[in-house]
Image (tube, rainbow, N blue to C red):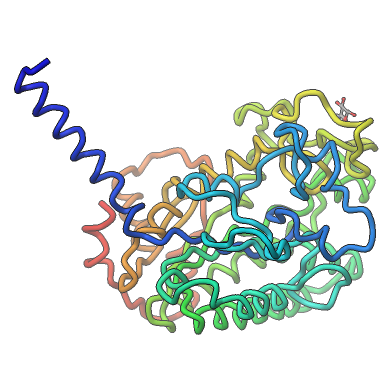
Length: 395
Ligand SMILES: *[C@@H]1O[C@H](CO)[C@@H](O)[C@H](O)[C@H]1NC(C)=O
């Protein structure tokens, strides 16, 4: 036992452990969550005058408790918090909760535009954040990750009310949504926020609820998916623009659109029995009316739990992709990188993708972001890079 070599070994092992753990000690790990039902951790039940389905079984069945989350179990923010080494982030409307690691402002039916009843728009969520911001130190607010999934209901409502928009009309609506998001990001930036993580929009026409309402469940519905794709492109352009305009603005852009598309089309490759029908609900693809008498026995075999939301297994896969994937899926930083990125460095997606392409020219792309180089040309501006400074950190 007293063998000096084994002593040395355990000492270096201890040092290694300390090294690996030191960032979690020195960083105030904070996560702020904004969005709709995909991220809601229970806010809806505090504003609704009606029964909130997610507060009752079969929601939460996999974890044995219905908490207001729109899934059979954990959500993407739950997994991200656990990867960050912090407890689940509580809903802001549960006033007595412990908000020391952040707050969740997301709520079912949230939109960017308009004033839908019994929910909070993005601007109302950000106002709540501003009202509460002194709960966190200025340092915690600038080191925190601000996570967003918002806009689905804007486009689903738009597609329902405008079945045949012209290209100009579609673009004008997307521009309105993006401008409203930009305004809110700037509010958070002024409050000290620097690390913004976006989960882009799903191909909305592939949601079981949308297919079923459309009457043709064989194919994804075109208009909602098209609106989501237009939005996603503009959103990435917005983030690139802000990273040039606002000093220290850092971001992550996760291509949820491709992740869902791949899982709907090639479900079995991703461990699901189906990415078409939901686990819970009635109708041809279980697209609506999830209740205890129509829930499947193995939610982990399904991508969708109900007509609009993912199963815990779907959320776990998404959480992993956001946390640790390469820039073909999430860029320019994944969340793990974004969290530890020093505040005075910004990293440019196009350069990272180029470096990767050079390293692996023939890689088969399972999931992919957009053609950022082309987008950059379209935007017609010079990049202001700091990649030299950043590259030693990344590679
Ligand atoms: C719909 O949900 C039921 C459970 O109520 C499940 O047994 C069935 O397989 C689902 N439908 C499809 C097409 O998967």
